[in-house]
Length: 391
Image 1 (cartoon, rainbow, N blue to C red):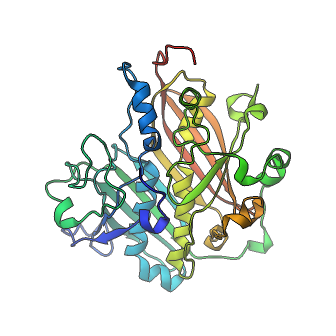
Image 2: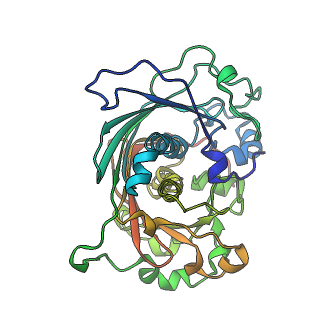
């Protein structure tokens, strides 16, 4: 089973030879910069593949999952943008501002992603770029037969893993960067921090004592498999799910909340401007986990038929210095929420037309609303659950 990878291990890229230049109107540099990922993306549900395989025997309607975690391409595409613009980012201390991403096809964890970056606009205080991702049509030579995975230590190589044509664009995004600025007239306003509004619930347990965030947060599946204590192999961060079942009981969908605590698995440098932007990408990566699945739980679906992100916007509201994550040993943070635990406050304002909206506010350990994720995606239910037996 794969181990828990750090940001550095998950987001590795190798630069490729330049492609043919685009028309002048598309990029002021008149170039496309290309990169390839060097390791496979995380596969949701892989932590439970033995249990799910056993459970699905004799149930042809049981869904199998082969799509790579969307947060991988979402974050790694911006790593490619940051590497392309490293000189400008460093010179002007530019910080990530927004990521407007669109998922247009399924990504696979058994082959690399190829990213193509075009600079759209340049300025000293504001800069934008476009990035597109595609994958080879065939799996990598490292692909394990009978699975959708590659070995944990597999390293993709352009000479061997980019043979043949690439598929259609599976993801595209516009990314922006801004200069750090002081508060205008000292204005720094926000609602009461989540730590204050949910103080009585958060105080019920030490942060590390909450159940792990599920590898696949489908309530009927978790209850059937009885796997609430599975830590899993989700990369970059340790994640805990606060029990809000009683708090949510009887509330309409738009008033319900989920609280997810998370902290770094390993130290992450923050010396350079690009290092600091990597911290933002850890937040963006973690924010994409389980959102639509949690929406389906609150909609009381018997089992999900399809949950898939269509668009995802991540907006940083502060200077990136406020988004820096401090790594501390577990012994220091297990019982101290303010010593390294960030909080996702997730809500579900609307579900209709086979889709659901997720709003995910990112709160720092000191109670600063640093960023917000706004996600819209498919969220549909199976007409009948394949679990036709009593638990």
